[in-house]
Image 1 (cartoon, rainbow, N blue to C red):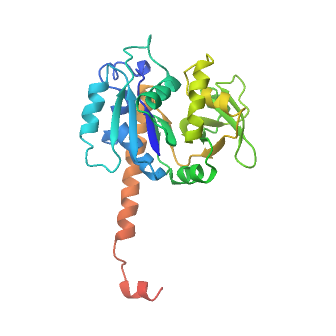
Image 2 (cartoon, rainbow, N blue to C red):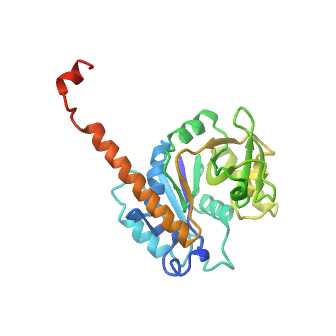
Image 3 (tube, one colour):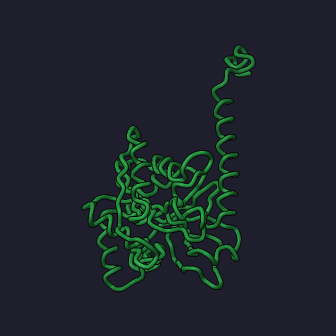
Length: 271
């Protein structure tokens, strides 16, 4: 299984922070955002290669980041899509197709946006992907229909099959939204090229799902924990503070679980 991280955007809403630094490399809790995403991908299981697709402007910065990760279990490759600004960018689905074509990928693929910060584990996502061997969409409950208007809104049946997907609806049917996390089995990959050849829009990435779910079963998997859509400086600051606290609490809980009991004899007796 391969993973594609979408990181070719220019993040203009975060200017001036992203004038010389790509959003996925901005620090969150003391580490690049991209590091947290790679950590989550490691929980999926079975991924033996990661492709980070970026643009010509930021390729060197991503290559420097990747060079510092040479000792990691999953090899990381940086793919330059050749775009230079908003006017000639390929779009999310266009970038997926570019990586598949230029890297000759004929394997199952997990796709995730390069600004997808989440606290919940992706072990369950990986398990569902292997069980279904069908397209799987990561979803998150934003618990507000007003907030849902900004995303692709998803409805699922009792079996977890997507029965409706609508990008940025004026009147959302639910508060469950697509969060740019996808699994595509290898047999589905040619449909990405077909979708683009038919003249469908390459952006946002959810439009391919909107096209796909009417042609075959697409399953939804709900992400637990906290998820951040990092689009503005204030959201970045909020995510940094919240994730720093989350990781600190996680570390404290881990230390407690490994600490010796106050009364070892009582612990052995099950008291």
